[in-house]
Length: 360
Length: 234
Figure 1 (cartoon, rainbow over the protein chains, first blue to last red):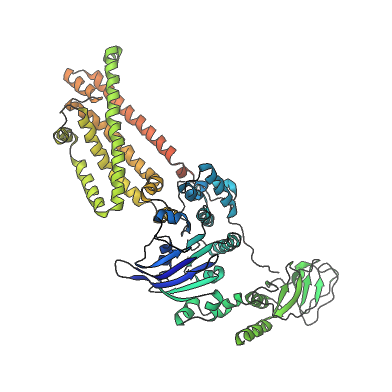
Figure 2 (cartoon, rainbow over the protein chains, first blue to last red):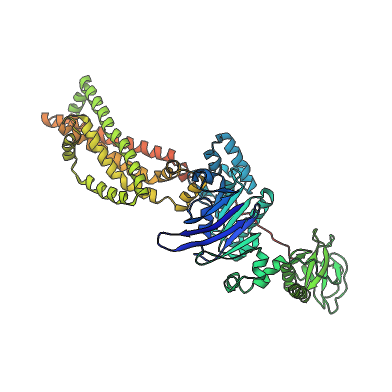
C-alpha cells in the first residue's frame, strides 16, 4: 500500500535523516516506526504526505507516485494525526472534524453530519460537538484528532507520536480505542513512536530505526522481541524483552491443575494445609481461604484473601505468568469467557511451557 | 461659558457644521484604519514567508512612526502628487501610521500560532493562502485587535492635526475657535473627539468578541476519561 523505494532525506545542514529506506507497508495493517530520537522515523512518516520532500528515491501510495498529485490534494486523501492533536483552537469540534470534507468540497450540512458520526465513533458524546478544543482534556482532544483524520474516510492514516503527550493510563485507553477502530475500519496505518511498549502493543509490523536514518529491523513484534537483528535492536527493545515477548505466545498449551473450591454463603469446614479457592454462585473466583482458616456456618467474602489477577484461558502467556506470580496461593486462576473458574496454573508450569517453546 | 456653548449649539448653521466635521472626522480616521489593517496583514504574511522582509518591515515600521504627523501631511503631496489641501494626504499619512503601528502586533500574533496547529492544517490539505486566511489569521485576531484599538485612538486624535493644513474633521472646530478666540467650538470639538474615540473603541471590543467566541469558551474539560478496566482481579 505504501512503498518506500531507496528513499533518502538529507537536510541542508548536511545531516542525513533517512538513509536509503526501502520498506513496504502492507494494506490494512498497523505498522509502527519506532526508534530513538533522531532516527528518522518522523521524517519518514512526513515524507508520505509530502510534509517533507525526499532528497532522492520514490514513495508510492496505492501504486501511485506521491509526486503526481498536487501536495494539497494528496494530503486530503491521507489522514494525519499529529502530536498534541493540533486541533484548530478557533473552531468547535464538529468544524474541526469537518475540515477535510469541507476542503474537498462537501456541503456544510453533509460535512457536519459526518463529523457528528465520527465524534461518536471515537467515543465522545455528540453534545460535545459545539465545544472548543480548549474545553477538552488532552485525551479527548486526541480522540478528536483521530476523528478529524478519519473524516474523509482516507485509506491511509499517518499517526505522528499521537499519544505521547497524554498520561499513561489515558494513553492505554487510546491505544485500545485505536485497535478497536482498526478492527472496524481496516485502514493502512503508519504509527510513529519512540516507545517500544506502545510499538509492540499496537503494531502488527514494527520497523525499528537506528540513529542516522537506517532501518535496523522490520518484522512482527514477536520476531523483533524474540530475535533482534543486532545489538542495537536488542538494547532498544530492552532487557525485559523476554517477558514482553510472552505477550505473543498463546497459552492454550498450558495444563491446568485443580484446587479445592468452596462456595460463598455455604457452610465451610476448617482448611487444612492448602489454599482453598472461593467461588460465587456463577462459579466466578472471589478470593482465597488461607491454610488454617476456622470453620464457618456461611462463608463471607470479607473473610477471603483477595489478590491475584485472573488469566483468561487461551490468552497470552504473559497474563498467565502475571496471574501465577500475583496470586497469594502461588496458583494463577484461569477462567473462561464468562469469568467462571476452569483451573489453576503455577509459575513453574508457565515457565516450563516457555522453555519448551523456546527450545522448540 | 455655558451661555456661549448654548448659543453656539443653538444655531442650526453651527450644528450642521459640527455634524459635517464629525462625519469628515470619522471618514478620515476609519478609512486609514481599515487600509492600515489590510496592509499590515499583507506585510505580516510576507514577513512570515520571507525572513528578510520581516527584518526590513519591523525596522521600517519603527522609523515611519517617528516622523511627526504634520511633517508627513506636508510630505505626502510631494510624493504622491496630490494637492496640498487634498484630504487624501491625511488618509495616506494615517494609513502609513496605522500600518507602522500594526506590523509588529501582526507579526507577533502570527508567530504565536502554535506550529503543530499550522502543521496539522498543512497536513489536512490546506493550500498556503487559504490556510493563512482560515487558520492563522483568525488565531491572530486577539493580538491584532489590541493593536487596532490603539491605532483607532491614535488616528482619531491625529485627524485633528490635519485641520492645520485645511482638511476637514473636528480639528476645524479648533482652528476656527482659536482664530476667533471663541471657545465654544473648541469645547464641542474636544468632547466629540473623546466620545468618538470611546464609541469606536467599544465597537472594536464588541467586534473582537464576535470574532473570537472560542476565547470565551474556557472552563473545565468535559467529562473525565472513561475508566478502562483491563483484565480482572479478585
